[in-house]
Amino acid sequence: MRARRTLFLGAVLLGLASLAYSQDVKTDVDKAADKTADATKDAAKDTEHGTKKVAKKTEHGVDKAADKTADATKDAAKDTGHMAKKAGHGIKKGVKDVGHDVKEGAEKTGDAVK
Image 1 (cartoon, rainbow, N blue to C red):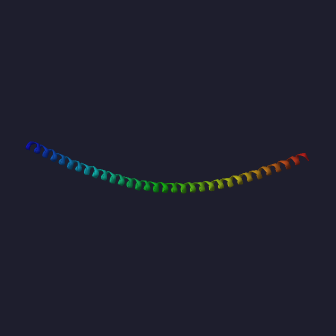
Image 2 (image 1 turned 90 degrees about the vertical axis):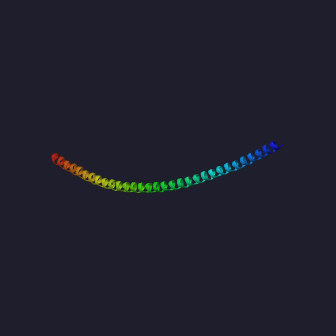
Image 3 (image 1 turned 30 degrees about the horizontal axis):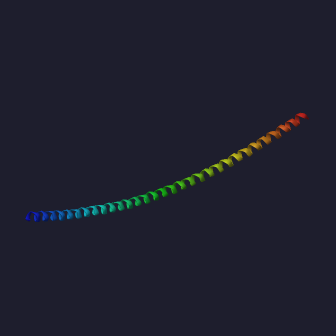
């Protein structure tokens, strides 16, 4: 009978030790899950911050490029207008010269016919 009691007490103690160990493992798993959740949250914040920074830099770059494009377009329009004016002046001068030459030719022809 004593052997049974000793065996029974040993089994109970083994069961209690096993239960205590399993509680300890559960606590470790919970701690690990909390650490993982915290790390994930921190990573998400860092990613958000980095994304905002990149977006601001991109926006600034786009604005800068748009300003440069507008300036270049404005300069090109000025140059085109200036060149058109010069070309128009040249054409006008050329037409006058042709008209003058035609007039002289007509006068010479008229003199030759007389």
